[in-house]
Image (cartoon, rainbow, N blue to C red; front, side, top):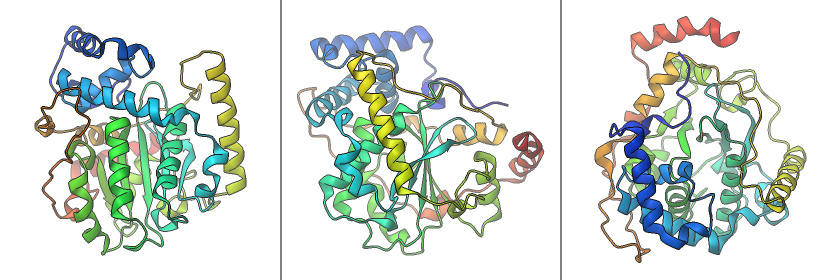
Length: 347
């Protein structure tokens, strides 16, 4: 069975027909009015539908959210950030785009919070935004989402501040909705449970339900990692066979090349993201079921009912639960399906 194509699985969580979906898209664009003409790409059908999904197809809330993103992008201008502005932040490889996709064809971002090398919240967020913009350039158009692999090597409670974490959650959830398909926290230390309890209230249920914990000493976790990634390309920090590690100079070259492509695209008037022309979308039933299990809960809709003129949305109130409940595990049926799929994955 192949990975689900085009729109993400949560798209149909309310079982809307294509006609109903299009009607809601049109409603959002109508409510935006002239604002929609300021950034046509952000107000495309494909983009609007991500905001609708993020707000469980509530057109009023989706319009408010999109209006906030329009305001943010016009002020922050994330598309104009260039490598030279954030090169210092990248020196330790604390965030970088992998040069491979997962087996569902999703872009992979590597995060190593233990490798934090600066203290400026503004600069750290700017680098995160740069990385998100770059990852989106390389998204498989049939997927539209990415995977985060978070390596906890060297991580301590002092590695990340609550302020940076709050701002990170704000940017990702409010301005990049439905871009995260899955976040795998690999080998988090025991002390991370305390930090996780502090972080979860900043996250919407739609976001934290996409977070999974994996451990190198857990057999089932490793089987899932092998099912989702080509182990020959996957970094050894995540149980793969790639021992090359992060090369700053090589990565800087890649980013400068991407910046040049982005500038060329903007100068030509093109609004089409730069994507890889061919992406292997190998998959199997486990990947399909994972996508199903990570679909957001329809009951998790934001309760904010403020008008479009308001830009102050309160943080979601989320009941914290033990992180152990989110560990990657498989039942015996899934285990058998992985073993049956292995020959196909290796071919």
